[in-house]
Figure 1 (cartoon, rainbow, N blue to C red):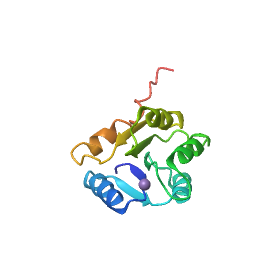
Figure 2 (spheres, protein in one colour):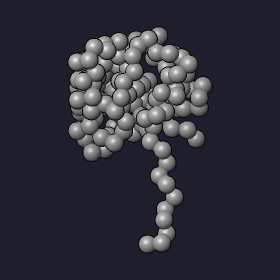
Figure 3 (cartoon, rainbow, N blue to C red):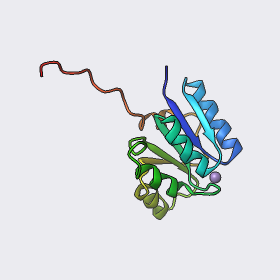
Length: 131
Ligand code: MN
């Protein structure tokens, strides 16, 4: 079974497209359209990766990333911000808030999944049993 991915995105079309592409590649997707809901869902479902919009109702993506990275149970989940803000200072803020990476909108359907997969944790190497 493939990994579970949480998408926090308030634009219905983007959420639909991102979900469609990931499901097509076999991922299990949970999508939420609100910041607080996203934070709650992350703690509850422990996704392998989070796709995070920056402009969101009730709490923006920067704040969500900071909170996720500040909690022991969610801090190891990679976060990839998806944003139409791509000025250098926005990129710096995305990284400073704790996101591992970012992608620019509009998303490219041909590369979206493979780009995200760069951030997915790989399975741990087989145990060395010489110890
Ligand atoms: Mn948005």
